[in-house]
Every structure is written in C-alpha cells, then in structure tokens.
Length: 276
Image (cartoon, rainbow, N blue to C red):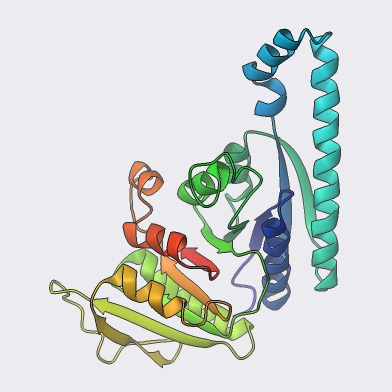
C-alpha cells in the first residue's frame, strides 16, 4: 500500500512544536515513500497591515517604506532559517524535502498548498498561541477547519506511537479514519490498532463482527467524548488518536468540525489525526 499517500505538507514556524511537526512529516514520508513539503508563511499582515502604518505614524518613524522593507527582509530571513532547521530534521530521517518560503495570508497559502496533499501536519502550539483564543493559536485552528485534506496535530515531543485509537461509526469521515489506521499500521512497525465504537440508543449499524486493520471493534456504551479521551490518556505518549472530522458544508465544517473531534483535540495530549 506504500504510495497511497502522495504528499505531506508541514507548516513550520519558530515554535518547538513546529520542529516536532517536521519530525512527524519526515517520519511518515520516509515510511510511506511520499513527497514532503515544508512550508513557512511570512504573513503580510505584519508588514502590509494598516496597524503597522498606524504604529509607524504614532512613533514618528520615517520613511515608512524603508521600515516596511526592513521588516519584510528580516521576516523572510527568519523564515529561511526556520525552513533550514526543518530541512535538517527531514534529512536526518533520510528524506529530501522541498522547502517553500511564501508570503501572504497564512490561511490562504496553506489552503492552496494542501489542495493536492493528503495530510497537513501542525504543531499543537504555534507562534501566535499567546494571542490566539484556543489551543492551536488562531492560524492553526483555522487551518484545521478549512483545508480539504486530513490533518495531524502533534505535541511538543516526537514519540513514535505503538497504539492507534480509532473512533468508529458509520460516517464518511470515520471510514476515512479507519482507512488511515490500516495504512499507518502497514507502514509503521509494531503499531497496534484499537478501534472503538461508542454505541448510542439510535445506532442502526451492528459492529458485533466488525474489524479495522484486522482488529475487532470494541463496542462501548457511554459518552463518546469522555471514552475516547480516557482511552487516549491511558498511554498518551504511545498513542495516536484517529478520528473523523464531522460536518459536510463548508460553513458547518469551519464552525464545528464535529463536537467530538474538537473535544478530543482539546482534551488529549496525544497526536490527533483528523481524517477527511
């Protein structure tokens, strides 16, 4: 099944979580023999936004054009250094990655770069975490909501998982999560798949004899959010959670993602793969 995943995109910034994202990208690209692209975005809001002109005017800084150019050059140089470090990480895994230093609005750039990708990898924290309202920072969270490909959100330290906890139900995204579990078990040595279906009173699908990657689906009654989080947190450093991204329309996907998906992202410390 190697070759099923064609392209992995890793968004890198200056955070330690971003370096781990590069580790994950290189690890999966090496195992799956696919293309790895490392992307750093110089956000033009910081050099072309009206707030910069306002600050410059308030400080009496002139000429404004020179300040914009100097700041833009500094941010580009910083981005090149960040990409160089991420590229070294990829090389250490035996992977020759492509690097892209791009300018624009982060969300627009990432959405375009992932149009033909199978997976976007992001660190659980980013450069803008301190100013964002949620765990990923504003830019990372919007990326997860809006891109069309699956997303892997990773913690600060890279640990190859030995267990894949998979949420199973009858939705399309859940079927994609199961396919990811089967693929990852094939390319990652020694990993064990643990599929879980949390049964509700309205369930019409019988999972009694169902399997994922050859493993029987564990059927549990209760609250899906609580059960999946508790299962992942039994061995958080050795576990990856794979869960479908719920929602069908663009607006619904952006605003909700699926309550269960969003809850798992917030409550676990394990890597979380959001399958589409």
